[in-house]
Image 1 (cartoon, rainbow, N blue to C red):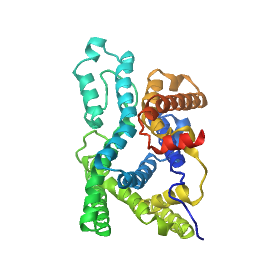
Image 2 (image 1 turned 90 degrees about the vertical axis):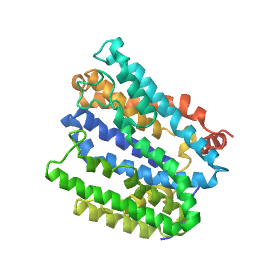
Image 3 (image 1 turned 180 degrees about the vertical axis):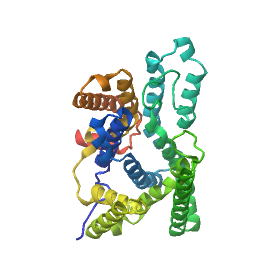
Image 4 (image 1 turned 45 degrees about the vertical axis):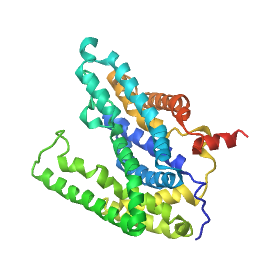
Amino acid sequence: MRGSADLNKNNLDFLRLVLASTVFLFHINALTNLPAFAPLGRFTSAPFAVRTFFVISGLLIYRSYTRSSSVSSYFEKRVRRIYPAYFTVIVLAALALSSLSTLPLSQYFGMGFWKYLGANLLFLNFLAPTLPGVFTSNNLSAVNGALWTLKIEAAFYLFVPVMHYLCTRFGTKQTIGLIFVLSCAWKFGFGALASLAASHGGYSLDNTRNIYSQLQVQFPAQLVYFSAGILILLYFDKLKHHFGKILLVTASAYLVDHLFKTDSLDIVWISGIVLLVGFWRYFGNFSKHGDFSYGVYIVHWPILQTLICLGLAAKLTPPIFFLLSVLLVGITSGLMWSLVESRFLTTSSHYRQTTMKSTT
């Protein structure tokens, strides 16, 4: 079964919106902890969505770098795409949530407020995940727990020029292969240590996960998925002719992981999903109205936390709470795109080019 997929005609914007929505649905269950939303926890997976995001990032970000006129041009595009909306969410949350704090404003706008603002604006969310007196009665008090992946994404952006230099210096296969192996060693090594520490009641930074479990999901481990995306890009002209075989390998790897309750082959079937959904059949110009996936991802957590803090998760029926959450996240992400994200894009941006083509 052969294909004639075009790298420029892809469904990755559609796939990213599905993945962002998956994280949103997963967190409805995780944050509310209501039995009615338990199926969302069983049939959606935030780890799967995040790892798939990283594979897509590897493909798109490495391509962006190789197509940029200079390193500074590459960094400018990356900053314009990710930081304005990120900055807006951090600052607006820090200011607006003062109205929900259990502390008086004089205490709210103290050291804790500035620590939150400083740490989060630098992507160091783990240093200050909470605001003074905010969401203290919720199941979790973190203001925006979904943002932990953004520091990894930023690390990818910084690492790409280094990776590209190493590829030109020592060879692409050798460099990507070594990075992949070392990343796997980090991921599975700390995974084994995490299991061992958990069985012996090991030290935990947050009393829910031991330090090895936290290290297992950080930047070096996620390079497995990012480098897989780069490999898809580099070998796309060969892979696009074998979608039938890719489907078979993807399904087989998923079944093995599912049957043995492991994720040791997830890089195989996640990469297969990106290829199959992203390129096998073109769905059309999905991004002509904008890209709302990033907005959904960065705004859904504080919106859910606010609704829970206001007691609406308990007062409203689950269907009404669900619809209200979807409506607010949809409206907010739409506003984020139109008022913030789209205004900072360069004229060469894929989204601006797509919009211009759709209006001519």
